[in-house]
Length: 139
Image 1 (cartoon, rainbow, N blue to C red):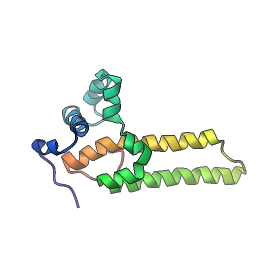
Image 2: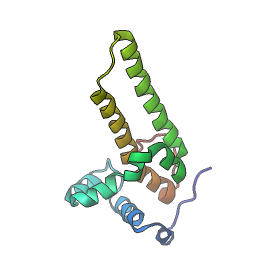
Image 3: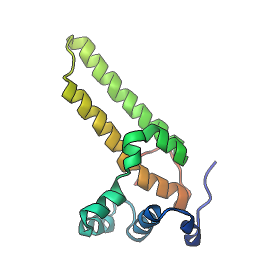
């Protein structure tokens, strides 16, 4: 079931950090738009992290996206994660070698960063625009 788009007045029910993120996305568009990129570069580092990353999603990504109601995007990200794991498993099986622990940790951190960077804009699309598709990279 698709969400009904919220009016600007309804955004007051969100925490201030979400209100700030939503306002930034409303004003500058999605992460791929040129106006977003220019405005994002002008922000100080702390604001960049607030807009672009979700630290709860970094540590608890699969659970947190289900809590936010982003189950379609979460299932797509879980599929990507599973595919990466299968590719690495096949590589280890075919070559007969184990990947170094640093590579395994790097892949896990990269996948966690994927959840962290997708969450804010996906939640904005769901709550403000009423769009909830399967594509986690829809920007």
